[in-house]
Length: 117
Image (cartoon, rainbow, N blue to C red; front, side, top):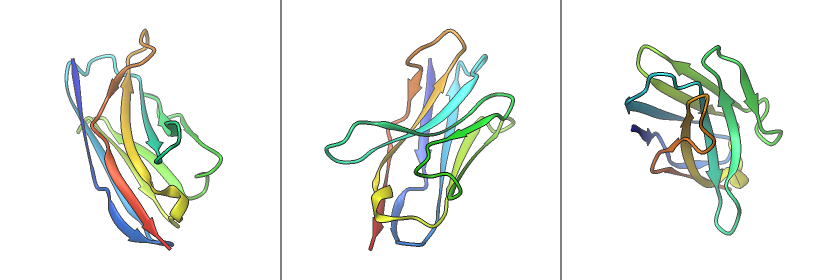
């Protein structure tokens, strides 16, 4: 099993910044992709950003140019730097880690991000 623990959420004003962290532990060998998802009240969970073991990054159109995903393999941690935050970024943010043969992967417990206008 793999355990994922997110941190760094909170309340911020529009235009502000937050940095989320997701620390992985347990049977972390072969983890390839690490993703950040978010789920706002009444909405489906959506993919925000992903990064592979070779540091290939992908972003949702809604966050391109504002969010940056990165990973520190020595610390088994993935980060999400969120700048120019908007009220519509308000959601619970979840970390996900997958091994190459997995579809669902492992999930963290989520961290709340609230952006006030």
